[in-house]
Image (cartoon, rainbow, N blue to C red; front, side, top):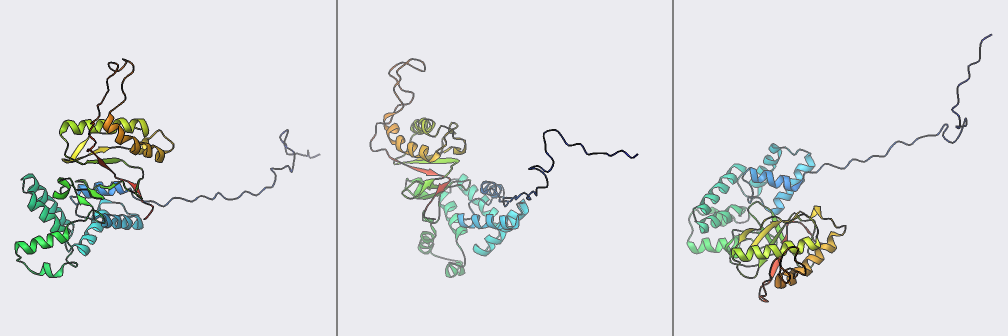
Length: 313
């Protein structure tokens, strides 16, 4: 007699129950499209000596080209930069590096006007100025007139920190530092995004002590509102201004926008009045302040961020 073998059914799970014979849908997974970090591209351009040679729009175009081809190699970055420069400037990446080196050498030698003139000529498009480019010789008046037409306006085109206008305290909406980072002035309709750095420009020149005092009050206000990592050291870029690292991705607040609003609201008062007066002697004598205020109603300032949210764009 052949024994009948019956399949064992685990206790507690009825045959043909709710888990029997069911169909399972395939998982629906969508992978995010790869995109290069803009800060990485700017860093590589800086390493190639091309920082300052490409405009903001040209750099954004280069990033779009890299993302479209999904090739983020150094070779791809340099080839894309070379094509854009040839098209818009009439020279390639190699010549652009030469200009960068020459401009730096001129500045180190104290020949600022010549360095600025070189930068302006390098930024000109031969397609925009065909007549001026045809002539090898020009009078000083003609060169001055051409230079004035080539000066960045600080609205569409960022103004380099080396620009004499910026060095003398003029305020612009867009400023570009020596590393190629663009800072945008906080103004109606333009708000901070998630910045990594801030630029503060005062209404008058600051001594070294005043700059450190100002930076300390910025740091104090930042710590009490943004509640993130401590700000970096203040690096002056003009007699009127300085830049501080401020990685706002590391805030401990859930509402960074509200924190930024508080920061911008509290800073003017803290600049004038200083930090809170001590009521205990834990960190210093009672009645003293960690940082004194300026008590100068004529001292005002502008805030710039390296990342913005512009609803109008």
